[in-house]
Image: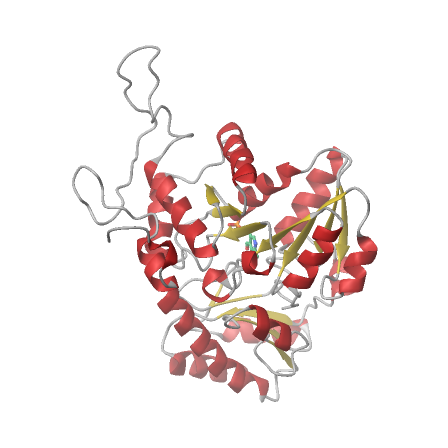
Amino acid sequence: MKGDPRNLGFATRAVHAGQEPDPRTGAVAVPIYQTSTYVQHAVGEGAEFEYARVQNPTRWALEKQVAALEGGHAGHAFASGMSAIACLLTILQAGDHVVISRNTYGGVYRYVSRILERYNLAFSWVDTRDLAAVEAAMRPETKLVYIETPTNPLMDITDLAAAAELAHARGARMAVDNTFLSPYFQRPFEHGADFVVHSTTKFLNGHSDSIGGALVSRTAEDAEWFTLVQKSAGAILSPFDCFLVMRGIKTLAVRMERHEQNARRIVGYLAGHTKVRKVLYPGLPDHPGYEIQKRQASGFGSMITLEMGSYAAAKSLLDRLRVISLAESLGGVESLASHPASMTHASIPPERRAQLGLTDGMVRLSVGIEDVEDLLADLEQALA
Ligand SMILES: Cc1ncc(COP(=O)(O)O)c(C=O)c1O
């Protein structure tokens, strides 16, 4: 397309943002610049492109695309969601404090509790659904409120606008892990966030064939800092992975619609099933976060957590599924099922999992875009 797609609709931006035709050939798909370095004309003249850890046109195209979808100033792409989060947390200095959702992805808990806390950084793990608890946890040295909503796998919903207001009133900033909903359904900057992080491994790439992460910042000043960290620490996303994620993002709008359509049918079936004790899905009107989610997002996504009542019941379901595969991760075109307590959240000590309500009987489903009748039949035979 000609011109700036920033004011166009979401699906148009997903297809076109950052995807300018290649200046030399007019190639519609951004080429994979699989090079480590660039020839320079003469000593002392410098060049726009010098070394590919710092400058890579394929990565820049993806970074623009993600920033345009989230509505941020700039994006930075990393080798994993965890390295995007690690880059974000470099805004902290020794002595700083963070208020963080008590139920984040298990890897975030591991990174914070085993690594960052050694560097004189303090973290308060708070049920961020409870705004009074967020307020009570704030300290003079609180620099960041870090929120996952919906949480993985408990599906807790935090009121983003209210949390941002609390953070800003105390001079702190707010980061949101938007992996579960993607910018198609939820755009945290519209609710006051200062930073958005993604595991692009999930819905953004959407095809379970790349590990990656993105960090989007609201201001030029923060973006400048992350550019420095990205080039210095160097955990960049490879050109080929950037290509895969860009390609995935182009179909994000249609995939998310189908993911959610399938999820709603499955929730409808499972919510009435005698062998399922409870279905955690923010699109169910009796979910405690339903009203907030309706207000701050345009959809409910395709992540569903089931409480089966016991480890044996969870295992029985997981062992019998045929179309839906037992695997960690989520957000791909194929439906996956996992056992959070022993898989994605195994790095959280059992007593802490118990405090959170993350039980051994939980099964997490990432509903894909297959024919929903096949998914329903698979669940039916596995539960029979
Ligand atoms: C919500 C969420 N954030 C971050 C991550 C970490 O991303 P990655 O595995 O790409 O490092 C994950 C991984 O499962 C996740 O589910």
